Length: 260
Image 1 (cartoon, rainbow, N blue to C red):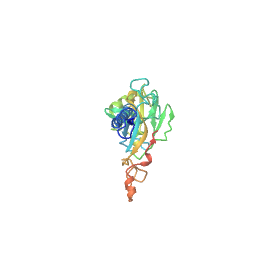
Image 2: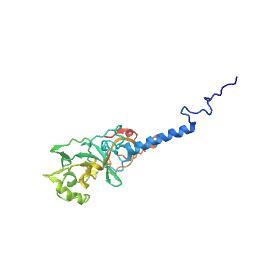
Image 3: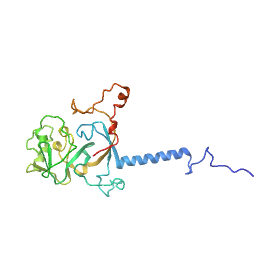
Image 4: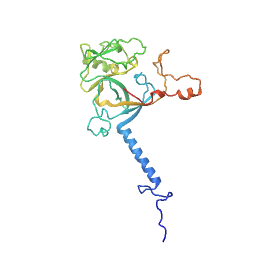
């Protein structure tokens, strides 16, 4: 009687799927890449914060993952991941990523919805006659600016204002309030004195809004042009110890913070 060949030996043994080990590893890697590409194409996308306009919510050097499905049209081909990340309407207080000028994106906070009546009185945002409570807003030192702080204005006093927007603003203003048209949104940066936003260049169309940030996945320490010399800031620390020098390049405490 001859001994039967043990095809399940440790060397040269086919995998449980009938594939050689190398082929199975490559197949597994390909599946992982396909899933990652699907997620990055349809669900999530990384962004880097380059400016101070959303301090202190978002700092210069924050890396974000944004959810591209939250505001995608429900039931459309543009929303293949709606079963995983459900669609919902844009709401006041949402931080949104939107197309501003191709291929650039901006990130701001929604303050005014379609039909809202908006004005700023001494930096206080008033929506439909009621003062908006904004614990996220900061007012870092800046020269006085009547157009910025008392909006809308009939005086063209700031050279940073888009002249086309200023002319349109006159037609959208009723009794001292900006009336937000249908399918348009009024957005502001949280760092109110250092943000170019709807006050300066106009409203955001609904179809320009493409994502909502969900988490900070990494944060590099980067200097902010608006940091106060004697206050909390984002500048690189000057620790003399080796550990301090090795760890000071990142804001470790911000990693995996949710954005809201």
